[in-house]
Picture 1 (tube, rainbow, N blue to C red):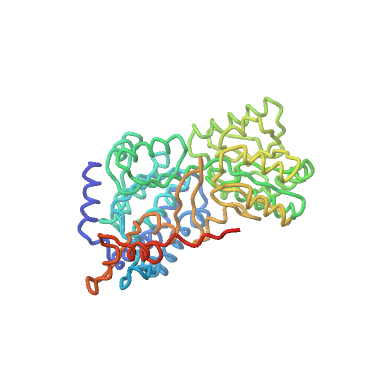
Picture 2: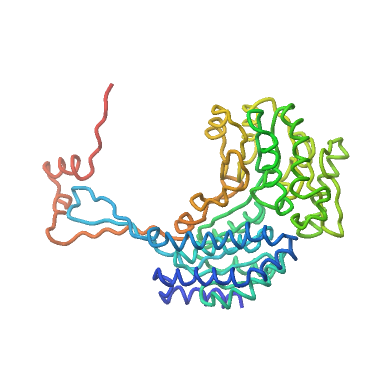
Length: 467
């Protein structure tokens, strides 16, 4: 069945129907209608899988996607337009241009934490670029997977094929030949995806997450900083690939954050977050056990909990939690991907830069400082998929910014025009008329005059400046 699904998607692409810009726009408009007309169905699925509030579902998934579609529809004509480029004098008369042509069939493998957004956002770019899509939702978000499988065929019957299932289905998909693979998830599976893609020389976009650090100094309003950090961290119960993973700061700054962060948590979710309709749940018992196990290990080692710490396995609930930690803490050895925020002391901004650079390159890095030197230091002396000053996570809402990692946090990027680039081939086109035939100068046999012309005009060596 999977082989037939892929073959059907390739047949649609090979028919040529996907190439006209109007076909692409038609698919995007259909997806937009689906998201609006069935927003309640998708929101209910997200609530069942992750305990998401409908407004959060709109902000981070459904509305996020409709905004991305609207932005893409507005600019698509300009993004896919052929780009003229200059031709050297020696080749005149001639014209040269770069065409963006679709790759073919794109495989999208989505994770469970934002199961609708992270499946359809790459699909938006792939369709806008003129491809067809085979999409694999996460089996760990079964309600969302079922909603996608129910509605996508009605609105995008030729353009997007949904393949439900677990590891066996993913394995079978990776055995097929695709023209691009976009995978969002962890590094272990990312390596499996890349190895499978290598068998067909298929290009990949990998979004792999990692521990995204926050640095805070005393030049900022710590109450506002704490509110923004808490918002970015505890959204979706901390199960966000670009969520703040830990906070670096001086002893004084962390002492003050240990007061402000609990206050921010109360402002966001009340005195009992378990009763808050705005606060989510862990995806499953395995995720719950992993995060509570890390927290228990650090508490047993003497880590101080300054907020939260309570959990309820039957409800998959972990309270928004803040702990004092060290570089050796269990919570600092892997991406937390849950609602626990370690505070780690460093002596200075320079020490924070060194701390970050000694570890894998993060997907995102957040800096709260008004100090120009500090901001420049983080800009030029660290490497991360994204760098944001003064707010976490919100860079995802800027359509003009690419989303992607670097090193262990991923490769490639997409969103808006960067999606068009990711899912297209840049074809070089040169058009030189046969008459007049100005190529004679480079034809053999060569002589002294041709040698001079070739070296000075056709392929000049360039002027060497002597001191």
